[in-house]
Structure formats: structure tokens, C-alpha cells
Image (cartoon, rainbow over all chains, first blue to last red; front, top):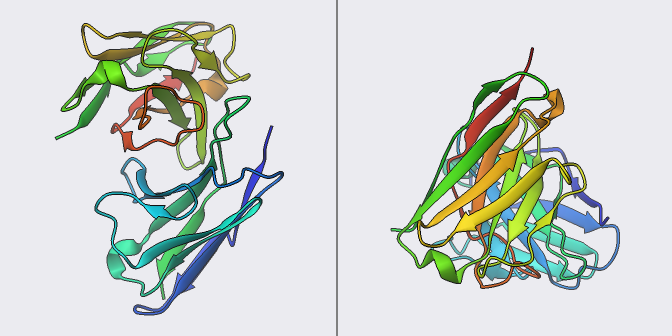
Length: 109
Length: 122
């Protein structure tokens, strides 16, 4: 099983500042990496897939990068509505498996 | 508007059974692979089971293999999860999630339902 590790566990950022979230896979997942946002009491929402492609309707301040084992989600200018837990997920083609990181909680400082 | 609505959750004693349903609307259900993902309260996400669009080749996580069965009825636009031999560590919110294509292999989840809560306790 591919293990996915996120860091940090909690990130406190001032409004308007940049937030950088990291995700590492235990082996190469090529670019089969997605990011989801989960606000309190809500279901997850797709932000990024294919490591860097923004999903429909996702603001341009969200960007993804990386390939292989190391990935990054960047929020270029944090807004109050971005307070949430962010999960990365690998979706390796074969054997079919979908594993999530443990999440990074983003707070407004 | 594309929508997924789960139902069937509730409280059950260890060893009991439940069947979850996920009603899809706003898109052509038969064209898309689907999965179930669970989340224990306050915890992270765990993929449970996946099903291709055509009805063949379902797959289950090792943690539920032999106890849970995913299925779908494309004529009713509905995804199911039959859960047998339930244990306390199966307690979680269960979300259904849509894949963006016919197959699930190599695809993320592009739409999630609101979830249904399953509590396993004596």
C-alpha cells in the first residue's frame, strides 16, 4: 500500500499571506495526486487533480505542483473562507487503490 | 445540478448489518464509476469500495473485504453498500463519491455526497 504523509498537521497563516501545504507518497504515484478541501461539517470538495489541474470553479489562488513522490498545494493569498482541513490523495492506477494523507488544518492567524 | 444523496445510516449492534444507498441526480449515472469513502468522526478519510460504470469489476479495501459489498442499479441511478458483520471500528460517516470517468482506475473523486452516519455500538 502506498502511504501518503502530509505536513504540517496545522498551519496558521495571516489573511492575504501564502499558505504552503506538503504531501509525500511512499513511492512514485507519477501525477496521480488530488487535493480536497473539507470545511467543518461538510463533505470534501475537489480542488486539484492530476497534481496541478484546478477543478471547475476553484479560485486561481489555489495551485498544485510536484510529481513522483513530493507534492505541494499553495494558497497564494489566504482568505477567511479558506479555513478548512486539506487532504491529499493518491489514486494509483494498478493495483487500484486510493489513499489519503492525514490532513492539514489551515487556520487564520 | 449534479447531486449525490446518501441514506440508510443509523445505529446497529456489533455483528449487525446495514445497507446504505446513494441516489444520484443531475448527470448520467450509468456513465460513471462510483466509490464509497468513510470518515470516522474527527478523523481522516478512508476509501472503502469502488465500482465501474458497467457493473463489473467491483473492488473493496482490505479492511472491509468479505464483509461489505458495493453494487449499483443503473436503472434506478443508485449506488449501494451492503455492510455485514459490522464492528465498532466501522463507525463513521459514509460518503458516496463519483469518479470523472467510466472506470475508477487512475481517477480521483470529482463529486461527493453529504454523507450518512453509521454507529456500531452495543
